[in-house]
Amino acid sequence: MLARVRDYFAQAGVLEVDTPVLSPAGATDPALQSFQTRYHGPGLAHGSSLYLQTSPEFPMKRLLAAGSGSIYQICKVFRDGESGRRHNPEFTLLEWYRVGFDHFDLMDDVETLLRSVLEGLVPLESVDHWCYRDLFIESAGVDPFNASVDELRGCLQSHAIDPPVGLSPDDNDGWLDLLMTHIIEPRLGPGLVFIRDYPASQAALARLRPGTPPVAARFEAYLNGVELANGYHELTDAAEQGLRFEQDNAQRVAQGLEPVVVDTRLLAALASGLPNCAGVALGIDRLLMVAAGSNSLASVIAFPLNDA
Image (cartoon, rainbow, N blue to C red; front, side, top):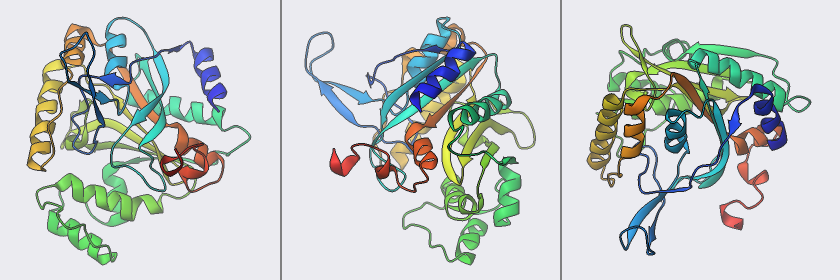
Protein backbone atom coordinates (compact mmCIF):
# COMPACT_ATOMS: atom_id res chain seq x y z
CA MET A 1 0.00 0.00 0.00
CA LEU A 2 2.81 2.43 0.83
CA ALA A 3 4.47 1.63 -2.49
CA ARG A 4 1.21 2.42 -4.31
CA VAL A 5 0.85 5.71 -2.44
CA ARG A 6 4.39 6.75 -3.32
CA ASP A 7 3.91 5.73 -6.95
CA TYR A 8 0.75 7.84 -7.17
CA PHE A 9 2.52 10.97 -5.97
CA ALA A 10 5.61 10.28 -8.07
CA GLN A 11 3.40 10.13 -11.16
CA ALA A 12 1.73 13.39 -10.08
CA GLY A 13 5.04 15.17 -9.46
CA VAL A 14 4.40 15.69 -5.76
CA LEU A 15 7.57 15.77 -3.64
CA GLU A 16 7.96 13.50 -0.60
CA VAL A 17 9.28 15.38 2.45
CA ASP A 18 10.33 14.59 5.99
CA THR A 19 9.70 16.85 9.00
CA PRO A 20 10.48 16.58 12.74
CA VAL A 21 8.40 14.52 15.16
CA LEU A 22 9.41 16.75 18.09
CA SER A 23 8.46 20.44 18.28
CA PRO A 24 8.59 23.18 20.93
CA ALA A 25 5.02 24.11 19.84
CA GLY A 26 1.94 21.94 19.62
CA ALA A 27 -1.62 21.70 18.33
CA THR A 28 -3.97 24.00 20.23
CA ASP A 29 -7.14 22.18 19.12
CA PRO A 30 -9.04 21.32 22.34
CA ALA A 31 -10.08 17.99 20.80
CA LEU A 32 -6.43 16.90 20.50
CA GLN A 33 -4.18 16.03 23.42
CA SER A 34 -0.44 15.96 22.76
CA PHE A 35 2.23 13.84 24.38
CA GLN A 36 4.98 15.94 25.93
CA THR A 37 8.57 15.09 26.70
CA ARG A 38 11.54 17.05 28.05
CA TYR A 39 14.91 17.75 26.47
CA HIS A 40 17.90 18.13 28.83
CA GLY A 41 20.80 18.54 26.42
CA PRO A 42 22.52 21.56 24.82
CA GLY A 43 20.90 23.83 22.27
CA LEU A 44 17.75 24.64 24.24
CA ALA A 45 17.18 25.81 27.76
CA HIS A 46 17.64 22.98 30.27
CA GLY A 47 14.40 21.13 30.82
CA SER A 48 12.62 22.51 27.74
CA SER A 49 9.30 20.83 26.92
CA LEU A 50 8.77 19.34 23.50
CA TYR A 51 5.58 18.01 21.92
CA LEU A 52 5.26 14.86 19.83
CA GLN A 53 3.47 15.90 16.64
CA THR A 54 -0.25 15.18 16.28
CA SER A 55 0.17 16.02 12.58
CA PRO A 56 3.03 17.25 10.37
CA GLU A 57 0.85 20.14 9.19
CA PHE A 58 2.74 23.05 10.74
CA PRO A 59 6.25 22.24 9.45
CA MET A 60 4.86 21.19 6.07
CA LYS A 61 3.22 24.60 5.72
CA ARG A 62 6.55 26.22 6.54
CA LEU A 63 8.04 24.27 3.62
CA LEU A 64 5.18 25.40 1.37
CA ALA A 65 5.80 29.04 2.35
CA ALA A 66 9.50 28.54 1.54
CA GLY A 67 8.62 27.50 -2.01
CA SER A 68 8.58 23.70 -1.88
CA GLY A 69 5.63 23.31 -4.24
CA SER A 70 3.18 20.44 -3.76
CA ILE A 71 4.39 17.98 -1.10
CA TYR A 72 3.38 14.84 0.79
CA GLN A 73 4.59 12.91 3.82
CA ILE A 74 4.02 9.48 5.37
CA CYS A 75 4.86 9.67 9.06
CA LYS A 76 4.11 8.57 12.60
CA VAL A 77 1.92 10.88 14.67
CA PHE A 78 0.89 10.72 18.33
CA ARG A 79 -2.31 11.58 20.19
CA ASP A 80 -2.78 11.07 23.89
CA GLY A 81 -6.00 9.56 25.20
CA GLU A 82 -6.92 7.87 21.91
CA SER A 83 -7.11 4.09 22.09
CA GLY A 84 -9.86 1.76 20.92
CA ARG A 85 -11.19 -0.22 17.99
CA ARG A 86 -10.39 2.59 15.53
CA HIS A 87 -7.79 4.50 17.53
CA ASN A 88 -4.20 3.94 18.60
CA PRO A 89 -2.10 6.62 20.35
CA GLU A 90 0.63 6.16 17.70
CA PHE A 91 -0.47 5.77 14.10
CA THR A 92 0.63 6.33 10.50
CA LEU A 93 -0.61 9.41 8.70
CA LEU A 94 -0.44 10.39 5.04
CA GLU A 95 -0.63 14.15 4.65
CA TRP A 96 -0.35 16.09 1.42
CA TYR A 97 -0.72 19.62 0.05
CA ARG A 98 -1.49 20.64 -3.51
CA VAL A 99 -0.52 24.16 -4.55
CA GLY A 100 -3.24 25.85 -6.60
CA PHE A 101 -5.97 23.47 -5.39
CA ASP A 102 -9.09 24.28 -3.40
CA HIS A 103 -10.92 21.68 -1.31
CA PHE A 104 -13.13 20.66 -4.25
CA ASP A 105 -10.03 19.85 -6.33
CA LEU A 106 -8.61 17.98 -3.35
CA MET A 107 -11.71 15.81 -2.94
CA ASP A 108 -11.22 14.69 -6.55
CA ASP A 109 -7.55 14.01 -5.73
CA VAL A 110 -8.48 11.91 -2.69
CA GLU A 111 -10.89 9.86 -4.80
CA THR A 112 -8.29 9.30 -7.52
CA LEU A 113 -5.66 8.29 -4.97
CA LEU A 114 -8.01 5.80 -3.29
CA ARG A 115 -8.98 4.25 -6.62
CA SER A 116 -5.30 3.78 -7.42
CA VAL A 117 -4.27 2.46 -4.00
CA LEU A 118 -7.27 0.16 -3.52
CA GLU A 119 -7.35 -1.28 -7.05
CA GLY A 120 -8.00 -5.01 -6.78
CA LEU A 121 -8.69 -4.73 -3.04
CA VAL A 122 -11.80 -2.64 -2.39
CA PRO A 123 -14.02 -1.47 -5.28
CA LEU A 124 -15.30 2.10 -5.01
CA GLU A 125 -18.76 1.37 -6.33
CA SER A 126 -20.30 4.65 -5.19
CA VAL A 127 -19.05 8.15 -4.39
CA ASP A 128 -21.43 10.53 -2.65
CA HIS A 129 -21.06 14.20 -1.73
CA TRP A 130 -23.03 15.80 1.08
CA CYS A 131 -23.16 19.26 2.62
CA TYR A 132 -22.90 19.05 6.42
CA ARG A 133 -26.22 20.86 6.89
CA ASP A 134 -28.13 18.72 4.39
CA LEU A 135 -26.78 15.53 5.91
CA PHE A 136 -27.92 16.50 9.42
CA ILE A 137 -31.39 17.42 8.18
CA GLU A 138 -31.68 14.20 6.17
CA SER A 139 -30.27 11.79 8.77
CA ALA A 140 -31.09 13.41 12.11
CA GLY A 141 -33.95 15.80 11.34
CA VAL A 142 -32.22 18.87 12.78
CA ASP A 143 -30.61 21.94 11.23
CA PRO A 144 -27.10 22.07 12.75
CA PHE A 145 -26.80 25.80 12.07
CA ASN A 146 -30.00 26.78 13.87
CA ALA A 147 -30.88 24.02 16.35
CA SER A 148 -30.63 24.78 20.06
CA VAL A 149 -28.77 22.50 22.45
CA ASP A 150 -32.16 21.39 23.80
CA GLU A 151 -33.16 20.29 20.29
CA LEU A 152 -29.86 18.45 19.83
CA ARG A 153 -30.27 16.75 23.21
CA GLY A 154 -33.83 15.79 22.30
CA CYS A 155 -32.64 14.25 19.04
CA LEU A 156 -30.10 12.13 20.91
CA GLN A 157 -32.69 11.02 23.45
CA SER A 158 -35.11 10.06 20.67
CA HIS A 159 -32.42 7.63 19.49
CA ALA A 160 -31.92 6.30 23.04
CA ILE A 161 -28.48 7.93 23.27
CA ASP A 162 -27.46 9.38 26.62
CA PRO A 163 -25.04 12.32 26.38
CA PRO A 164 -21.87 12.00 28.46
CA VAL A 165 -21.83 13.57 31.88
CA GLY A 166 -20.07 16.92 31.86
CA LEU A 167 -20.81 17.94 28.27
CA SER A 168 -21.39 21.68 28.57
CA PRO A 169 -24.68 23.16 27.33
CA ASP A 170 -22.51 25.90 25.82
CA ASP A 171 -20.48 23.43 23.73
CA ASN A 172 -22.65 23.39 20.63
CA ASP A 173 -19.96 21.68 18.55
CA GLY A 174 -19.66 18.94 21.17
CA TRP A 175 -23.37 18.16 20.82
CA LEU A 176 -23.13 18.20 17.03
CA ASP A 177 -20.17 15.81 17.20
CA LEU A 178 -22.29 13.40 19.27
CA LEU A 179 -25.02 13.42 16.63
CA MET A 180 -22.41 12.92 13.92
CA THR A 181 -20.72 9.92 15.57
CA HIS A 182 -23.81 8.24 17.05
CA ILE A 183 -26.56 8.89 14.51
CA ILE A 184 -25.15 10.06 11.17
CA GLU A 185 -21.92 8.09 10.70
CA PRO A 186 -23.58 4.67 11.25
CA ARG A 187 -25.98 5.50 8.39
CA LEU A 188 -23.37 6.47 5.80
CA GLY A 189 -23.21 2.94 4.45
CA PRO A 190 -20.76 1.49 1.91
CA GLY A 191 -18.74 3.46 -0.63
CA LEU A 192 -16.83 6.73 -0.44
CA VAL A 193 -18.67 9.66 1.14
CA PHE A 194 -17.44 13.26 1.26
CA ILE A 195 -18.97 15.70 3.75
CA ARG A 196 -18.18 19.39 3.23
CA ASP A 197 -19.18 22.90 4.39
CA TYR A 198 -18.73 22.39 8.13
CA PRO A 199 -19.80 25.10 10.61
CA ALA A 200 -17.39 28.05 10.81
CA SER A 201 -16.70 27.14 14.45
CA GLN A 202 -15.18 23.87 13.19
CA ALA A 203 -12.92 25.45 10.58
CA ALA A 204 -9.63 24.81 12.48
CA LEU A 205 -7.02 25.77 9.83
CA ALA A 206 -9.43 26.09 6.90
CA ARG A 207 -10.68 29.19 5.15
CA LEU A 208 -14.26 30.36 5.56
CA ARG A 209 -16.58 30.48 2.56
CA PRO A 210 -18.89 33.52 2.61
CA GLY A 211 -22.60 32.91 2.89
CA THR A 212 -25.48 32.89 5.38
CA PRO A 213 -24.12 31.45 7.51
CA PRO A 214 -20.46 31.29 6.42
CA VAL A 215 -19.06 27.76 6.35
CA ALA A 216 -15.63 26.19 6.61
CA ALA A 217 -13.90 25.26 3.35
CA ARG A 218 -13.33 21.83 4.85
CA PHE A 219 -14.29 18.24 4.09
CA GLU A 220 -14.09 14.82 5.67
CA ALA A 221 -13.99 11.54 3.74
CA TYR A 222 -15.53 8.27 4.90
CA LEU A 223 -14.85 4.91 3.29
CA ASN A 224 -17.37 2.14 4.02
CA GLY A 225 -18.51 4.09 7.08
CA VAL A 226 -14.99 4.65 8.46
CA GLU A 227 -13.76 8.22 8.92
CA LEU A 228 -10.62 8.32 6.82
CA ALA A 229 -9.49 11.85 5.93
CA ASN A 230 -9.87 15.51 6.86
CA GLY A 231 -9.06 18.23 4.33
CA TYR A 232 -8.98 22.03 4.08
CA HIS A 233 -8.70 24.82 1.60
CA GLU A 234 -5.91 26.21 3.73
CA LEU A 235 -6.16 29.48 5.62
CA THR A 236 -3.35 31.86 4.60
CA ASP A 237 -4.20 34.79 6.90
CA ALA A 238 -1.64 34.84 9.74
CA ALA A 239 -3.64 37.24 11.92
CA GLU A 240 -6.80 35.14 11.64
CA GLN A 241 -4.88 31.95 12.37
CA GLY A 242 -3.25 33.54 15.42
CA LEU A 243 -6.68 34.58 16.70
CA ARG A 244 -7.98 31.03 16.27
CA PHE A 245 -5.02 29.67 18.25
CA GLU A 246 -5.82 32.12 21.05
CA GLN A 247 -9.47 31.06 21.03
CA ASP A 248 -8.43 27.39 21.14
CA ASN A 249 -6.26 27.97 24.19
CA ALA A 250 -9.02 29.95 25.92
CA GLN A 251 -11.37 27.04 25.30
CA ARG A 252 -8.78 24.59 26.63
CA VAL A 253 -8.47 26.58 29.85
CA ALA A 254 -12.27 26.74 30.19
CA GLN A 255 -12.35 22.93 29.88
CA GLY A 256 -9.66 22.49 32.53
CA LEU A 257 -6.95 21.60 30.01
CA GLU A 258 -3.45 23.04 29.81
CA PRO A 259 -2.89 25.70 27.14
CA VAL A 260 -0.49 24.69 24.37
CA VAL A 261 2.52 26.67 23.16
CA VAL A 262 1.52 28.37 19.90
CA ASP A 263 3.69 27.75 16.84
CA THR A 264 4.92 31.27 16.10
CA ARG A 265 7.13 29.95 13.28
CA LEU A 266 4.00 28.78 11.47
CA LEU A 267 2.41 32.20 11.90
CA ALA A 268 5.56 33.83 10.55
CA ALA A 269 5.45 31.48 7.55
CA LEU A 270 1.83 32.43 6.88
CA ALA A 271 2.74 36.11 7.16
CA SER A 272 5.59 35.64 4.68
CA GLY A 273 3.16 34.20 2.14
CA LEU A 274 1.64 30.71 2.09
CA PRO A 275 0.64 29.88 -1.49
CA ASN A 276 -2.97 29.15 -2.31
CA CYS A 277 -3.26 25.44 -1.54
CA ALA A 278 -5.40 22.65 -0.13
CA GLY A 279 -4.22 19.94 2.23
CA VAL A 280 -5.54 16.69 3.65
CA ALA A 281 -4.54 14.15 6.29
CA LEU A 282 -5.48 10.49 5.71
CA GLY A 283 -5.10 7.65 8.20
CA ILE A 284 -3.05 4.88 6.60
CA ASP A 285 -3.89 2.34 9.32
CA ARG A 286 -7.62 2.91 8.85
CA LEU A 287 -7.23 2.64 5.09
CA LEU A 288 -5.42 -0.66 5.52
CA MET A 289 -8.12 -1.81 7.96
CA VAL A 290 -10.86 -1.17 5.37
CA ALA A 291 -8.82 -2.80 2.60
CA ALA A 292 -8.34 -5.90 4.76
CA GLY A 293 -12.06 -6.09 5.53
CA SER A 294 -11.38 -5.72 9.24
CA ASN A 295 -13.14 -3.61 11.87
CA SER A 296 -10.19 -3.15 14.24
CA LEU A 297 -6.89 -1.32 13.91
CA ALA A 298 -5.24 -3.94 16.14
CA SER A 299 -5.60 -6.43 13.30
CA VAL A 300 -3.49 -4.33 10.89
CA ILE A 301 -0.97 -2.60 13.20
CA ALA A 302 2.00 -4.89 13.85
CA PHE A 303 2.39 -3.69 17.44
CA PRO A 304 -0.73 -1.95 18.80
CA LEU A 305 -0.56 -0.26 22.19
CA ASN A 306 -1.08 -3.36 24.33
CA ASP A 307 1.52 -5.38 22.36
CA ALA A 308 4.15 -2.67 21.86
